[in-house]
Length: 245
Ligand SMILES: [Zn+2]
Image 1: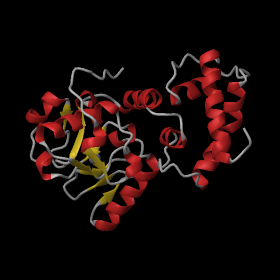
Image 2: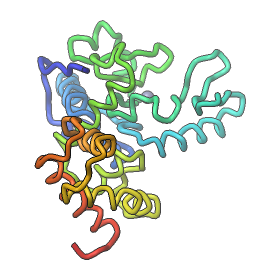
Image 3: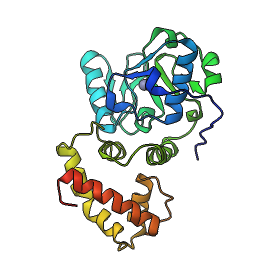
Image 4: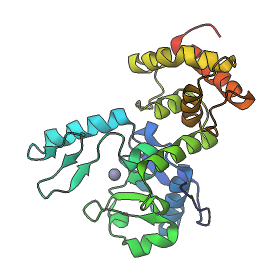
């Protein structure tokens, strides 16, 4: 399990961080808090071009990168590499942006900072060729499955269960709009969520999948906590689909 240390100092991200895509601000609260603290020491705001990025946005970022650099190579998993063989856009599902562990902050003052200088603040730049890409230091050496499990837990713990959270945990652009993809996803999961809310699901695989995505202990049993959460998700699905509650 990823251990997110809480020994680092935090400041209020609303004061210091500016997200160019406003809906991408739901990064891990430790990451936003630590970045804000560093900003407060430097008396500099931080412009973030990419924060949390959904799978859907990751695919679009790859397409934009290929348009800008026709000499880059797109590998079969969707990752984009430059001519030096460096990964420029990770494959969908394989980016630390997709789990809220990283930001891209192309600001000169932070690009100049070395890893030795960032370490005391719990931050790291894992790629020398991307001085704007900053991650939580705990992410080093942790595999994507663990990061993803942690992502679902922090979304549930720190952010309201709203349309954006639903979009985030389902790989959709968290723009808070009930577009066609968001409605289709809501319709797809509707019956299972309803059955879990009613305590009628005995298929532990289905229950586990639900528990994982909504940040509950994934024991596969449709207990009180799980059915209560499913009732809350069901209310949200009704809202997305425009059904009477
Ligand atoms: Zn990045």
